[in-house]
Image 1: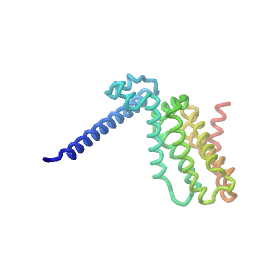
Image 2: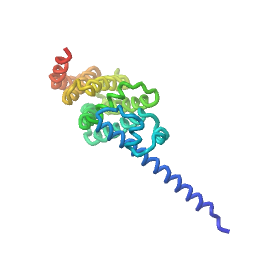
Image 3: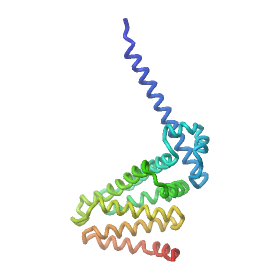
Length: 236
């Protein structure tokens, strides 16, 4: 008598795999629909029913597969971090650990600016949303991004011995979030966004690096000062 159990088990495994692939296709359709709507509308004010129609999927399926609309947005933002890390990896040059930190900052700005029609409304929404489930995960990823950026310089002995790397990474993260808020509300141009980030990162690093690197950071602050003064003039 032939034992059909191995064949039955394989069929069941294939069925489960097919179901998971179908779920993943539906997830991708939801994210693509949300991204399309953000770009076309210029905001995130559409409803879950609107999103379901755009994705040709039921509202129940969106809640079941992903969760709330804010979960959809935070997932899109996390996918954005993946893109930023790819840009950073492509631009990274071995050896200059201090410049690698600025490369990490430039990669974020470049990604946001290049796709401003998507990131401006997305960040404008999420910066004002208290989300105890999805926001902590995103903020942790953001923190890890900056910690990873400064680690090579730390290991190379660029910083003073009393430098607290976690505190420095968090400080840069908080600063970047604040500057991004200006940019997403159109209170800074793309160029001013980049210059403010470069100036601020240089200022924070200046307090931590050893003497040989201080003139270089001060020069960078000087190079980007004019862009910041333009923002200050408008604010006053």
